[in-house]
Image (cartoon, rainbow, N blue to C red):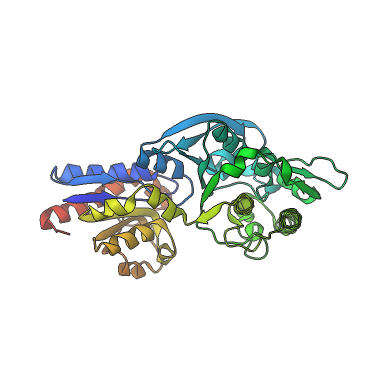
Length: 378
């Protein structure tokens, strides 16, 4: 029986690759007759780089860049198995977890390092990029990144401005002619499921600013600065992207990539296509996917829902294993043949996380026992 295991990560406890290997072990421990394929998945957030490298037989390239607080940090980017596509994960260059909680403040963070990593990859000859936008600590509209790519920003006196969120409001003029010439040869596929515009009540500052450490007053100021910044770029470029869906992703990095002719795509879809998920589902007799928390929101573009949609196209049974099943999980049965929680009896979130490997193995083994007994066919 061919079993495809295509999970997302269990946020805060297990990477998607770790989830997949635990689930695979449960099946193989139950019966050597199971033929398992592990295809770890991601939706454009943390873990996307590792997922794509594993799925395509790619490799990681070590480098250094400016971190979110302005310090030099070791980081990395990936090269897919096609040896043509570079993968850059924002979370590993300017990610929120990289900033200590007491230092989280979007006025004090920068996206500069992202541009530096792009330049490093371009200098090695790469021109095709997948950008995983999730998990950023910045709210600078991507202007720090654009600076690293050669774009120059000046204040009213004609002096160059700094690279942090606090400098955004000082921008008076932008010179796009200094853009690194290789950028014009590049394609950027942007993995993001965020559809927020750049500014306003549903914009980058209002929705995501607080989780990055911004106070209510700072949120208002950041939003005003992003609006001003967008107006300066619109004047220089002759096109206005501030209201485009996804412009507000990653603190406005989506907006900056739109100005680089980037194509915003569903993170789950982009990763699935790069990983040849459809082919793997076609060859499977049963599909298992998973995530840390599943509820009615899972149906709104989350990774397991995308996996289920592919399985349903091929009429392949699909089961969901989650860290917990929350409000409205009953709605998931329209897409999934079965839904499972790894929790056994009453337990705290901390206990569930600390025992995640054991609990995931136990629940997956139960499913394997059922399938082994029934020997269902596609």
